[in-house]
Image (cartoon, helix red, strand yellow):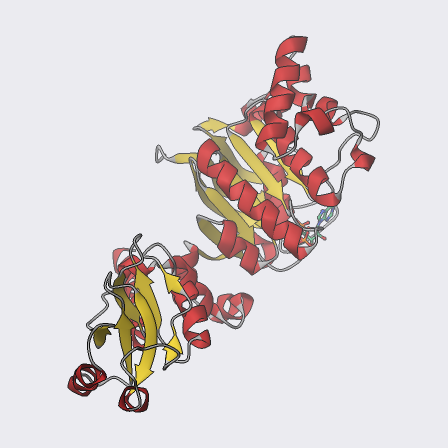
Length: 387
Ligand SMILES: Nc1ncnc2c1ncn2[C@@H]1O[C@H](COP(=O)(O)OP(=O)(O)OP(=O)(O)O)[C@@H](O)[C@H]1O
């Protein structure tokens, strides 16, 4: 077994009692240590069943599941579940227990002493973005949906499990709170580096949360398993393409930073140069717009030939003001957003002093998209050749 497989499913099958078709059929899958692997697929395809097989809430009818090379069927289920945090959509907080007691469920089972349990509960509340002074003695009904969901995550982290199983954890939450919870969780994961299997039916959530995504069809058959970038750049078949839906190219722009682009020259003049110099710079290029920068090379205004011809040379209220400047760490998606808003159809990239480092144009994005598609296709061709 590869040493990086924290969880391995080997031809796992689950046929529920009294059913003829398995909910999960011959599923083989490695989950790498420290990654978020997302299981995504249409309703009823077997995502929750797969998750519950991992912590033995249900037993497989075929195949093997290993944690750290150990066959889970040989491990006491209670012990197993203490190593694995489990978060579900309905949270399942105990209504008659305080938030601190809820969070300390597993540490209590492990018979930690009182002081250690209390300290851990406070630590987890902090981690989940809730002030212990305010929340530790409250009851679940005194929380908003988003707060309760944070408590659910905190409880699953109770005894610092190596593995987290999360079943639509942010499903029943309004879109704004949901996005906040997703971001908070990703920040937390960057620190904690748990091995996480995350179930959702929402492809956008999968793209956002997953280091890798397994797109499942009926009976949990894997249709494509890869990084979000590669799935977006190269859906392997019509099922995956349909499941991703419209806008995959645009979504893919989120995965590349502007630092990865090779930005060519752009016609520019300093604000102490004459409009005539601007006209010459513009004519030497094949561009429609010229950029006026200040003495520190900070972009100020976009100007066209007509603007320069009428310019007083002060460059005040002439052409179109540069309002937004992006940094090398911003994404191609950010730049697209700005290009669509900018009259020039382009977008300035600056360093941390605000000095111009390049101008992104639509052609750069087209090239980047093409490159990602070619690389992804080549990757799959190589896989086929090596098979
Ligand atoms: N206890 C059960 N007994 C019999 N069949 C079941 C049981 N639980 C689930 N199933 C069936 O197994 C299949 C997979 O269900 P599962 O809940 O794993 O799907 P899912 O992909 O998580 O769906 P959803 O996104 O709607 O939650 C479904 O056809 C479901 O009806």
